[in-house]
Length: 171
Ligand code: S3P
Image (tube, rainbow, N blue to C red; front, top):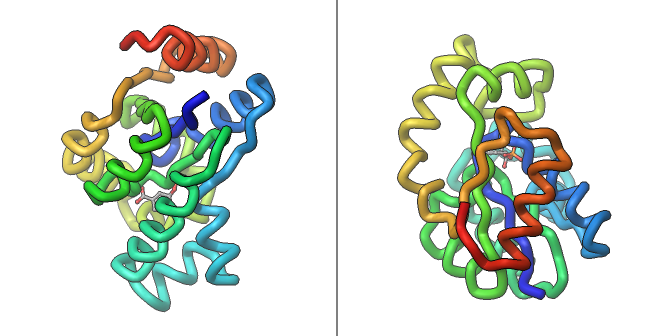
């Protein structure tokens, strides 16, 4: 089976769904963010603060290349992976790329209790979320399929992904 790649904005549910999918399909779960932190031996917050976003994106692209070549994995891709065309090319080469979406209110509710996302550690996270969602919409649209997670349970999203991967039809 092709790899399953979950992309989407921060708080769209990638980690929860990727973990559930990996368990259900007996595939390995891999997270680009986890691999970046392991490689760098520091947190994403530290990487952004000390080395800047471009540096982070370069490491992210390396990690994307590595995970794209793995087999039988569910890839939980960081929210900004879609920004580089080459990342999408690599991910699509061995995988089906599925974008999870949710509206800005849902994203705000899901992300506000955490502090590990440097891009949202700002004075007005709601505004930042709206701006980034608008800016990134054309990039997320490049996924092979899209699932709106806003009104679905975890199980329902997992079922949709399985339908897509098994049946090869769009949502
Ligand atoms: C980012 C999303 C984060 C992480 C980093 C940057 C982004 O991953 O890669 O903070 O640019 O959207 P999650 O989407 O898993 O939170």
